[in-house]
Length: 106
Image (cartoon, rainbow, N blue to C red; front, side, top):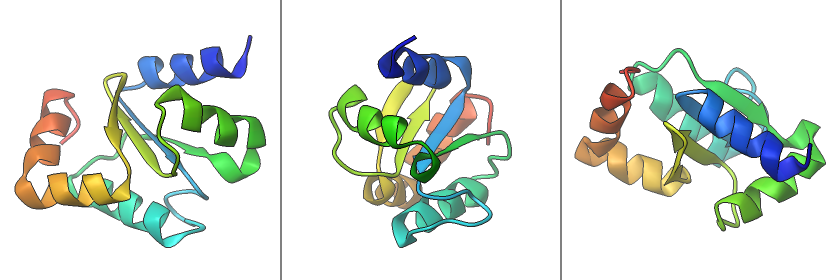
C-alpha cells in the first residue's frame, strides 16, 4: 500500500485526525501544541493524532495529500479543515465547535 492510500485510510477511518509534530501530550512545535489545545478546548477526546516526526513518509505525503505545505493538519469526517491558524480562527468564531459537533465529537 502506498503512502497516499495509508493517509486516505487514516483520514476516512477516523472522525477526527490531526497530523502533528509530536503527540498531543508532548507536542514538538508551537503550532502542533496550539492545534492539540484547541481540540481539547472543543471537548474532543477521540482523535487520531499522527506524529509526522516519527514517519518521514507521512510527513512528506500529507503535504501533497491536501496540497497544504505545513503541519499540523486537521481532518474531520475525511475532509481537510486546515492548519493551526485556520483552526484558531474557526474556534474563535465557533465554526470549529459546530463542525466537530456534527462529527459527534464536541
